[in-house]
Length: 284
Image 1 (cartoon, rainbow, N blue to C red):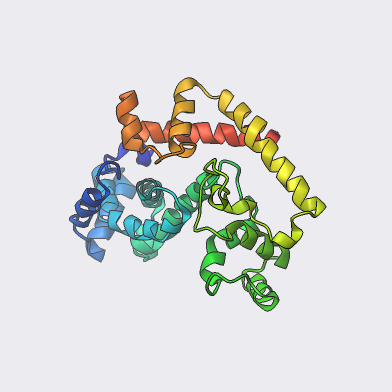
Image 2: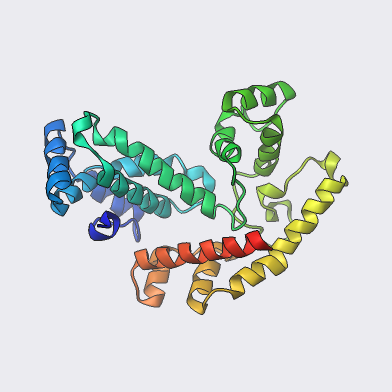
């Protein structure tokens, strides 16, 4: 059974404020109610019980998704991914272990949003190793202000996260200068460059910097073009509207209206297209 597909739950498309008001109206469950519903779902495969468990915890997903607002991705999309994590948590939840569902579900919600952020923050992934992921989600909060990290701070952060100092320096360079931008905007301003492209000026003419620049340009031109060419027309339109638009990115709801399908179907097409593009770019 695919609980994520079988349960009709509110979707965070259209008015986000309206969605939040809706989920906040669902009543919280007592421990006894939660145990009874989870037991019914686990022993009788009662989808109505599972739905009540999901609905009563949608506000938790909204709260967790707000913590990822700084990564430049649409809040509605973060919530949708978190909802998938919540439904997976309900599917695997065992009430007999004596742990409340909210505590159990937090891991699943965060994990699903983590994966979404890493997949979509840039078409070319910036955080593929375990160390890079640790830094991606922790470095900005561990830095004091916007000043460049001092050697002692680099050493302390590397020790706390159990990563190399080189990884700390590299991730800081990727974050430097901007809040977070998905892709270059196409102008000649400094703001037209994504954070991953920032390196200290003193290294501008070093061989490594030159090679990275050449590789980046190759990926952005021939690599990205090849990845887009491998998509069908609808998928290509969705990816361009969502991630490569020079203006405001299209929402799932807008594209759903354009293609006369559900917003969830647009999300599925988008994720399949991005995965296919990642595979092509990785092979370039």
